[in-house]
Length: 88
Image 1: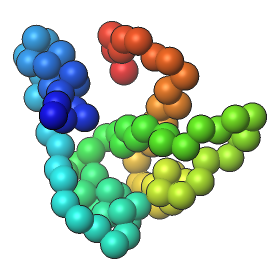
Image 2: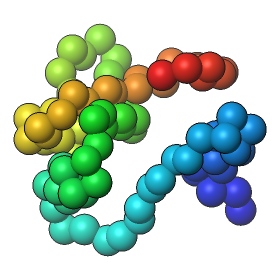
Image 3: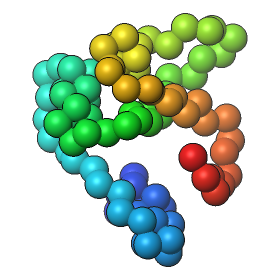
């Protein structure tokens, strides 16, 4: 099975760009995302929204917690049929 990051990793390799990522179990994912971002000196946290918003303007769950806790800007991708990303 192809990993969820495979297309990102492939495109990054084409561009010669490193895309660091980590994977580990967490009981408090929002806090851990913010902690890792701080430890790594991240200038941006980019998250995908896994819940359909369907006319709701509020984000919930881990995404909302990261937005509230993060010391750096947080981008949230709400996929509505996105076919290609050329630049973030």
